[in-house]
Length: 111
Length: 116
Image 1 (cartoon, rainbow over the protein chains, first blue to last red):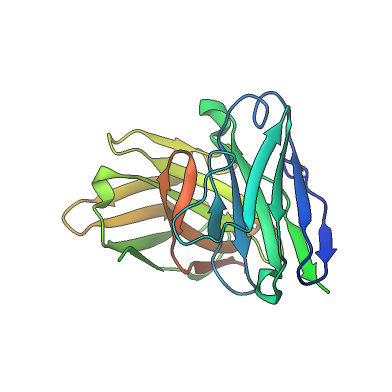
Image 2 (cartoon, rainbow over the protein chains, first blue to last red; image 1 turned 45 degrees about the vertical axis):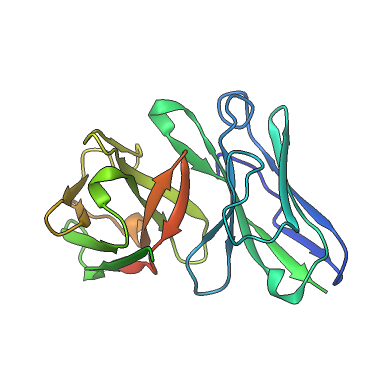
């Protein structure tokens, strides 16, 4: 049972937009602006796509955006491309005891 | 260029020990927060441990008292000493350069299998 709740799957056609949610509590997502999103292709290491809710690391396309409202964070992928098909994980700072907690992951399929 | 290369994984019996290494290049390990994150086969990500630049260390409850994170500044290398291993510790272990409570750079991972 993951600390953060994500839908197991999401899908969209090329060019469309898709949003993945990540629901926590006031002790993690809702309490801090330290939500991150990671992309993981099969057999590969995760890659940071969004940090501090909405910031993009250098090199990440601006098709990827993040937001947060209350205890729920969201990752939006606009202009879907075939290479966006991957697993996506959210994470949040959860205080000094738990440090960082993850969601269970969402498999994004590009139809 | 930032690079992280893990090693030391393998097959170990329950109750055994293993030490993972993470050799870094392109930055100074001791000046950064560094973490270990693991992923059980077919499962999601789980934070394991972090060492701050000042030397403070923190652990997930699932490994507290059994795992120890450390670093060798002269070798620019991060370690994870794992003792009293259990079947549920079976996973790919990643080291990650940590900044602003996010894992910005990841190694390729090393597989640890705990089985008799």
